[in-house]
Image (cartoon, rainbow, N blue to C red; front, side, top):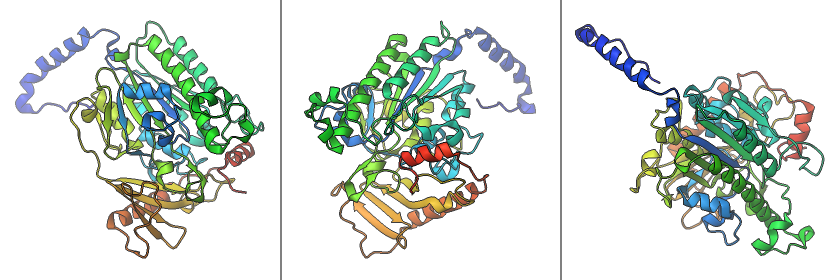
Length: 460
């Protein structure tokens, strides 16, 4: 809330009447006036590719619940994350800052304390805030996210990773705990809530869910021989079912017009493209491009599609815009609220910027853990992506995303000229990493090192 400045002497005679009017207005507001804001549910899914959702055109019906959800609001087709790694991406989503600004550039590196974020802004508006995370990298001790929520639940109940560690939660675990939290809210509610649930599936190693195989046209009896692609698709169907149960619980408790829902992934996944399995180290669209949808009935017309360039930095500014609240100056994302609440189209930013870092640190990682972890920087303009690989003598690659969505044909081959905007972006990222590395060097406990290694984020 902005503070009013003292009136000048020339207008001093108006001060007391205006003050009296303001006080009378405040006195007339009911005790639950904060309920004019909607409840907000942010649903994020780990390692979810946009092109594996049937709502984005995939031939297998992997996501019926998410498809129905997206159809009731706005769906983005060109939304990319600023970094394809869990902690950096989700910290950017909540703070609307780039990784080199919030400092959580790699899994295991916590972001700066005291940052302004969407949940901290909403807490000042009397929101009750809670987060439910089932990925070990999002532990408060490793990410610094806990301070941004009233209730930060780390749900590590299952030995998902080859039966070795209680390092994750299944989608069912997370949904159950989130629904229990909703049931425990004070009734009648005197303040709206913000709930964030981060699902782990379909993160590797992809489990085979036989109960979903037949509906996807996959042999349910041959799970041991299923390909990684088939296992991945059953994981998507599995988390979709759990999301459906969460959505049903939300709708049973909150009228549609009083519920704003965001659905987005933290990053995608490379399933063998460019000879790479996983995510984090490259800026190809299989890991950058994510599903992103915002639903608020009837404010956002159903079936809205936004084809302009977007970023997960935009989540905070857009939600605040939909609530009629200003974004803080620190927020770097774009506010899409005007586009989403009308049927008229609109252009957003004409380019987005990205960065890739090594997965995680080992032990303390040294005093230059952030700067030494930078692998690539990139820039996307309509139809064109440019990536600068810093491991190969600053090799530049350029792709025509319209003609070559698989990013196979490098148009920059033999052309070493670095675009000025990308050069400036590299300088900004490096300067930010230098500053971030002045923070105290982190130290990972042995348990976290082993679990991050099992997750594939620390190389042997």
